[in-house]
Amino acid sequence: MADSHCPILEARDWDRRFWDWKDKPFYAATYWSIMHIPLNLDAVVRKAVADIRERNLMSEPIITFTREETMFHSTILISIREGTDELPVETLTGRYYSRLFEGKYGGTGKYMKEMQADLGKQGLKPGELLLYHATCPVCVEERGAAQTVVFARVC
Image (tube, rainbow, N blue to C red; front, side, top):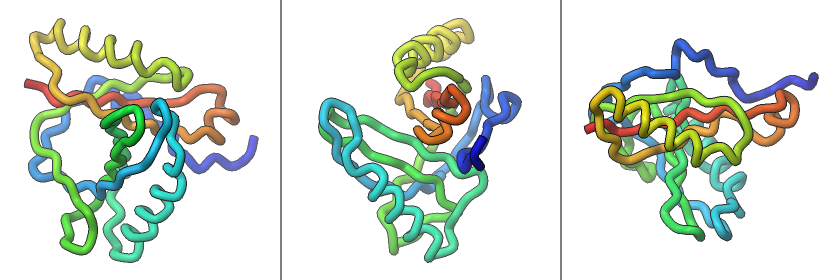
């Protein structure tokens, strides 16, 4: 097996966990797609990471969300240590609940339904759903499965 560059997430850190954020900063960038298939995502991520590293703003853990705005463009949010006026920043505030899923990329719809059902059992209503695709296509090929964390803002 080649050296993987994507982390292998541990369930204890990501599955069925609450996150309380107040003005949690994320670098925000738009990328283009056709029918939800990303076109320039790689270039957008490379530029974002270079901008973040140049300003010493890498966070731990690094969380990268995608938010599909339309069939033709989406937003990527990359966690950073602190806000800055030098970069496009979006902040998240609220209580979020996360679930870790493993499988094929095509399982995202199923994962989102499971998340909503899980929250319903807890008497919680999901707000915005955000996806953290923790495994790149190269690592999926090596490992045979992708890890996706679904985050839901809870109301």
